[in-house]
Length: 207
Image (cartoon, rainbow, N blue to C red; front, side):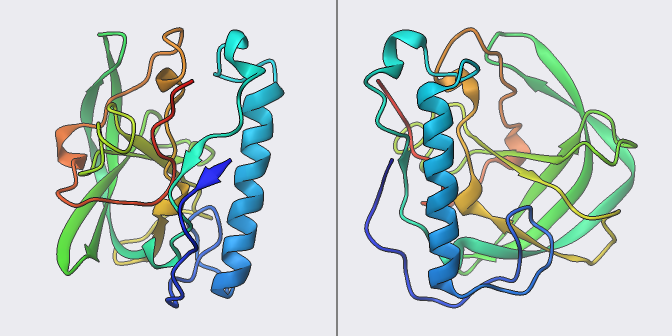
């Protein structure tokens, strides 16, 4: 596992790892937990039969590349829930489309600018299905995977209009199709293309 220089010392956001409100850990505690989770993921990718890393590359796999932990990129957002979700077809890396519906919009400030990200589900009435937040940003195709990155949120109970939800960009991950063409992955729709560089989470990886 490799990540950039040490995390910033800024105080930030009150959430746990799944995007729901919680007592905020200190930055040091947060960074320690994040690095432990990254090490666990690297171990899975390097050895598990279901790893997306092709078998011929696993012996030399030394971990994914990450941006340095950035506690200040746990961003508080305001949720707008869509009671009548609209369908959003998403193209995939395989060339076909998959159907999602837009269930929530998250509004937030980043680098002094206002932004929005939308959250989707395939089964909007399924409380067990996570809220899927695929996105591109100004690092896409340069520092991060050209097809964008994903965040999944697991709120406890139904989201409410005006609710504060923390999106932790440190948890932004690369879809499996970046590692092997055997996987097909949805591409972030244009409405989730951020006009800002998000230097947190997973970086691009190559064997």
